Image 1: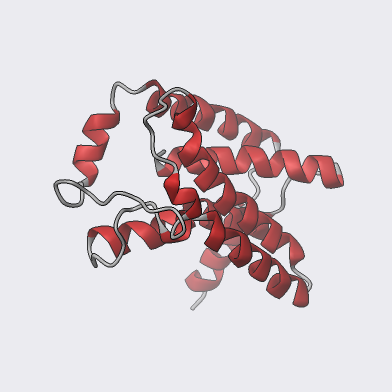
Image 2: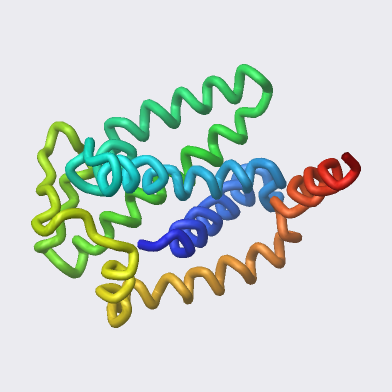
Length: 182
């Protein structure tokens, strides 16, 4: 899945979570933490595999539940120590939804490899022809219904984000105002 799809799925999961737990929409900074969490696995794995060459693929270390679950628990405990436990919840939902959604193609393509979910216990196959480029990946994705569904998910997430009052924009606006005053 691409960044837009990961952000959309994470937001949909998180708004459902906050509404079921607190009967309120998500709040500003927590949404920004959520969005970071939703991109975190790719921000770690892609550069380490594609450019540094220390990981076998762009879905290993930070996509593995063996890493993400303890990391999410640790992030939650640290955030809770500073009375920001909800930031830990937001990060966990973003990061874990990323890996789970990346594994979904196994439902319609039994040949899809989901060994990354338990890497390094389960081995993953490295790239046959070297690391792919973003353009190659985009070209391969164009006709894939899974890729196209990301835009539907994004549209739904944007509608709900609008209904929720655009949480996450206010902290950005305040930060930009502070920078503008300098």
